[in-house]
Image (cartoon, rainbow over all chains, first blue to last red; front, side):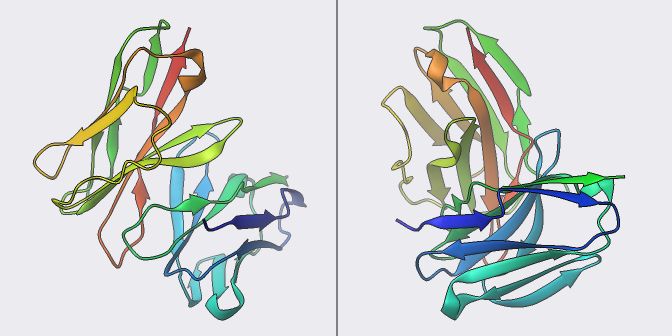
Amino acid sequence: GIQVEQSPPDLILQEGANSTLRCNFSDSVNNLQWFHQNPWGQLINLFYIPSGTKQNGRLSATTVATERYSLLYISSSQTTDSGVYFCAVGPSGNTPLVFGKGTRLSVIA
Amino acid sequence: GAGVSQSPSNKVTEKGKDVELRCDPISGHTALYWYRQSLGQGLEFLIYFQGNSAPDKSGLPSDRFSAERTGGSVSTLTIQRTQQEDSAVYLCASSSFPEGQYFGPGTRLLVL
């Protein structure tokens, strides 16, 4: 099956810093999503991005499907950005997702 | 509009008891998924419903686990004869292509 690797596993940032999270996957995908799991455990959709680039406020994401990786950029980080960021992929739109192990982000004031 | 809802939020049960977990997907979403998140295993797929097709049960860890989806909407995940290793957060998601999956808040199950 598809393998998903995320890096780094842990990241500590000073408030206001920028960061890049990476997701590598082992096979062609037609579904790729980034999620933020907040301290209460809720998985929040950030991006549905099987290819291309999207931006939403301080967050942006780029997926290069031909090279099997995706990047999540967080700019001007805030303490509320803390939590675990998951990348998840699937072979097509409405199929189960395979999750990476996540990147645990801690933003310090 | 309303998101995915799950009930109960928390469930504590004794080993050997049966439990039922409920998921209400986003209205109009044709696909519904159950996942499990545990410390040792991360986030893993359990079962998937797509429209009126037979469910994909390939992720169910044992025959003690089953799920149904009535009327193409609400789904119930049943765990029979619960074991301590079943303790986890059970997450439900729904989707409608070409959108991505939206997750509910989860049910935290503790088996004593």
